[in-house]
Length: 222
Image (cartoon, rainbow, N blue to C red; front, side, top):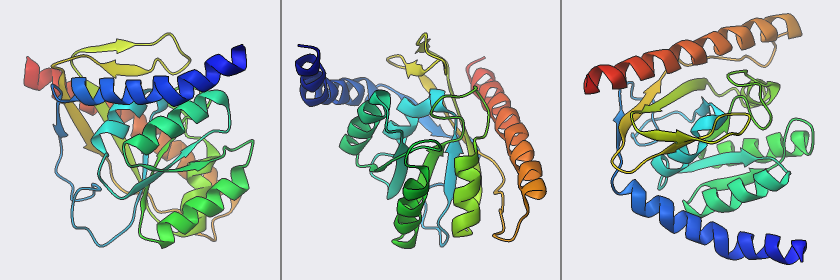
């Protein structure tokens, strides 16, 4: 019975969830809050790795719909849900994580990059802690030579799930947007000490960018 319910949710519940997000998404007013020329929407010459917080998964998937973007979902049950939902929005999904299928997933993401796809990846997924930068995004940058760009999101009307990441669900008629930070280069010849230094710098950058994004949205609505 449990297996049947799981299959029912995957094959019926997720498409319904997609329709629901599409409908309420028509009322959202999200935009890029700082013009950097680094977003997937612009005719840029470089491929980037975008790093955002796991809590911002829903608005990011919606906002990046229609762009040539690939992403990573864990091999856990919640990863299956995320992968199926994101695929409906046109995101190219790769399955794996830093603990299960990690090496293979990084190679697949590298292939996506070589084929001209940007990559958007949760820096603190799949299990946190909130705001941390896990090794996956660092290794992907080192493996591919592509710059990692921190991404932040904030909106004025939202619900937060009681999950480890406090998943954000923008409410109808919410306004807000995204901010993009400075690109981080992760050279292939970095030793572990320098890699850890850059990881700590990226953690700080993600935190500060999210604070700036929140201040910008609240300032615009104030």
